[in-house]
Amino acid sequence: MTLDGLDDLDRAILYELQRDSRHISSRDIAEHVDASPSTVRKRIQRLESEGIIVGYHADVDYERAGYQLHVQMECTAEIPNRSELGERALEIPGVVGVRELATGEHNVLVSTVGEDGEDLARIARELSDIGLHVADEHLVRGETRRPFAGFK
Image (cartoon, rainbow, N blue to C red; front, side, top):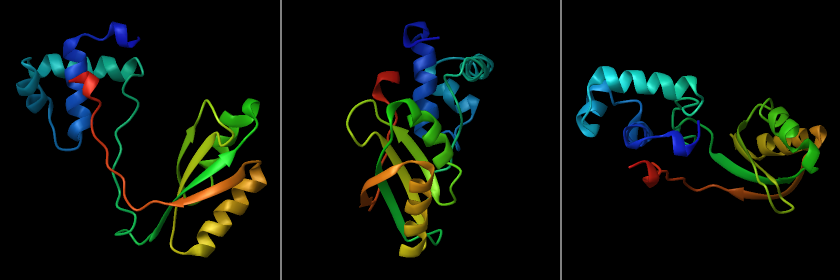
C-alpha cells in the first residue's frame, strides 16, 4: 500500500499513534478521529499487516539511563554494501540506530550511546572492522520529534 491507498481515517490514526502510541487506546483514538473503537482496531491491524506500521518504540533518555554520550557517527560505505553494513552495524553493542542516506559521501549515519570515550572508540573500531569508514562524529545534545503533519 502507498500513501495514495491511505484514506483520511488511516492518516488520522497514524497521526494519533505517532503522537503518543504508548498512552492512547483505540477508544481514545476513536474519539479524536470520529470512528468506533472497533473500526480503529481493524484499521490499525490492517496498517500493521501491510507494513505501514512497522513497530512501536520507547523514547529513551540515554543520559538518565547512565549513558552520558550519545554520538552520531557519519560513515561512508560503498553503495552496493550500504544496506548490509547498516544491518551489521546494528549488531555492535552501543549502536542504537542506523540511517542510510541516498546522497553524499557520508551515506550511513550511525547513532551510538556509551558511558565514556572508551565505549565510543570501541564502537568506531568495530564499525571500521565491518567496513564502515567513520568520517565524523557529533555529540547529540538532544532530540525532539513530532508526528508527521501530513497524517493530520
